[in-house]
Length: 84
Image 1: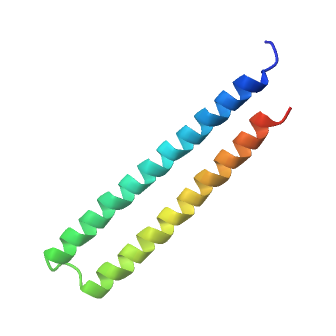
Image 2: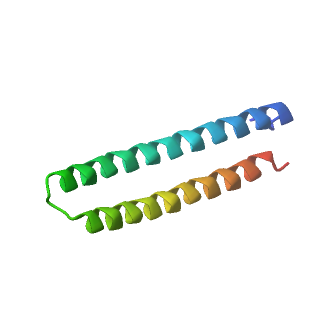
């Protein structure tokens, strides 16, 4: 296997960023689904407004954590690929 050229490394870096962004979009879509479910539970009076707010905050913290993890992995991989 021939060594990677600088141009090919840059292309791979762009692909990594795109895959990372796709992952973050998927995480946000999951967050939206769960927020909709919680909103529906509150609307049906299965949970209180306080509990609704508490659950949404927890969902947001989990989302932020996983998005940060994706960013960390993307940066590490990009650094790894761009290193000569």
